[in-house]
Length: 388
Image (cartoon, rainbow, N blue to C red; front, top):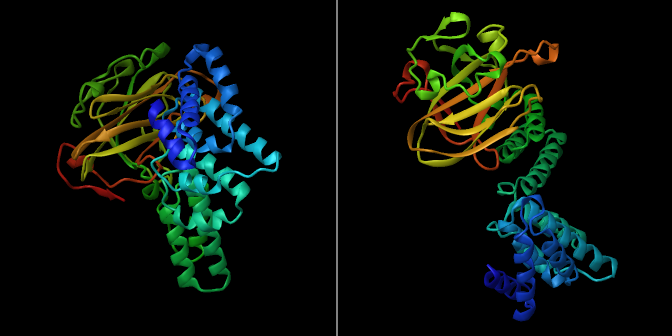
């Protein structure tokens, strides 16, 4: 690692190899910091030395963010900001060409590229106009957001001129790249004025067709750790015995909520101290790396192809889109997604919700190609609703 960072610094900024090696050694010391303060004294000393470097060290420090864990990343971001601010305050500039090369190199970590972009813009106000048109589909969600904002502004300008066809095309172009909810909703509202409806659930990759099984017992919170039959394998024709001896099977439901919210109180019934499962089978055209992202106010576990990929035992902490993220791999062909949603026994009005939303997307939040299998084909047929 030390040698590679030295070469990066020397190659990008033309610094002497010895100086670049010094920077690499400091980066290595900082990235060795551990949790609960392990290595902090050494890292603090290394940071003080690193923060005294000149602006020629910025690309190497930024590159150090590529594989830095969160604690070390905080030290490195602070070093970049300290060096850059000091250089500008002293009337000196930053290595704009090297920073721009770093921004446009998608091999670097998105957080590092964004930081480089912010400082580049400080010394080169023409950079956004030059770079953003090429960043609409960037793997950095923050850079992508700025690029989409420009596309939206362009669409608004065209719409103001009264050219409906061109405006719709411009908004559709922005929608194709948009990943942030507020931008997508703004585009959808603009297109609605032109009688164009956007399927928000499909755009984000929300699963809207589910089989639900409930209520299993969660009295005194026992259900979260309990391994009920669906976790051992889903049989869509099975009948279960749940809380208080209730018998039930899998109940199909389709949510019309634009963000895929499934309200178990409405579909299953109002219960407290219970566990509910949502099951969906999806067909993937290829093996693909994805993120399963869920939102719920309830304690939750997520399983993909029988393997637990996420859990959080916390109740009524609020619900927001993408609050739970589980990176995983879908195999080519049929895959099973199972979500376990536990409701406790709190009596407060705000603790009555028992609901979830779940989507499958790529690392920047774009829907991935999937076919959601219908209830009758969940056991293995290839029919079903197509997602983008």
